[in-house]
Length: 495
Image 1: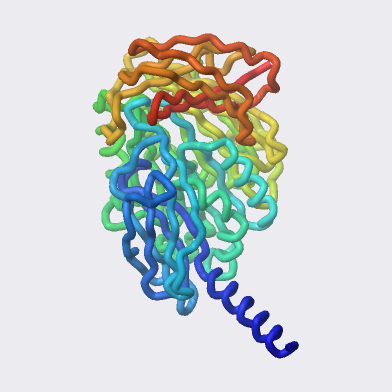
Image 2 (image 1 turned 135 degrees about the vertical axis):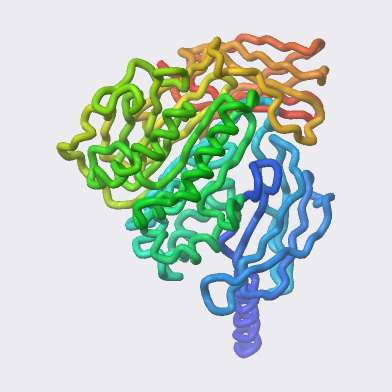
């Protein structure tokens, strides 16, 4: 009897271990959040598969994944690239473990909003390195905001050469990686083994590599720079020419309102890495000024910093009057290397004139785009707001009403709330060809539904006023559902 129980127990343990071979699930893209979306995972099997759909029946079918070499012996990275996906939808999927020869549990992934709505959100963070528990905390807080996707500004590990270090990163950020498409920028600690870092991620390729690239989504272009080649080699003529031509094309594209740049190194900092990018202000930053980049996001210094408006073509020692991409207006640089690396304090530097805010803290950025407005909110690791600023291009020549990238959504929809941020109330405007009974929900950052309203949408345009002054200040998600079509947008309630 005891022998039979022991054998049964051993069998259960073996079965459990076999079923747990899939790990390191992460999302990427070869083009943008809705086109070329990929899911990648690690396994010791040889031929994994995926089944997926927009319902729990996985109606889109079963597909064999592709594979590439992992970073540990006997481990492969398996990948599946989706066809163009429907915006603001839930993908239900299950992975077939070819090692255990069994299908895994059902998982979900929420896609970004339809690109033609020009209303979305994204998070930004970087520099996790030393403290895995802090990475878990910060990445989970960012993920709880339900961003459309995220930017990660590099330095995943201390050395960047060890499989065990990357195992720690994937384990600590598992929830964040499994639920968010990430656009990665390589840090200086990742540069130690560039081929290893590059192989981890499915990202757009430029000049046959994926460490600098551009993603155009909705009314915004996101440009990721590999600053390591500039800093380590003193120059990178090929990448600089690509940056100039990419920004020049964006400048003449009437559908692009916002230009966002992501990289690891900071150009202006009062922290430990002051001066690292001084040599490239006359080349890289000059391109930012020439083409009116709106926002520069980076890490490298382990703290939070935001600059005044900077335009070096106007002044190299004083801020200009206004953020913006117009003539004489300045760039905003936000440095936040607070995803887990040991914090740096401020010091006296030549960049003091450029810096508006400096806070030695861990945390992340959460950014919302609503047409002609971009709102940047920075949070510490207690999820308290430490800084908040809005860029507004309403009425400027730079702000258009673009049609965006066409997707397979059933109609061209636009959901906006104003004012955003708002003090207690907002007006919802929803433009859609679909009509009928509409459900409007307000959800807080924990996923709790705080309000549900039923409204009859009889016409193309819907306007409705909400008073939520009794609720706590914070970020909320506002969604409108009509039939099987759903659109959403973030809203910040202030006090």
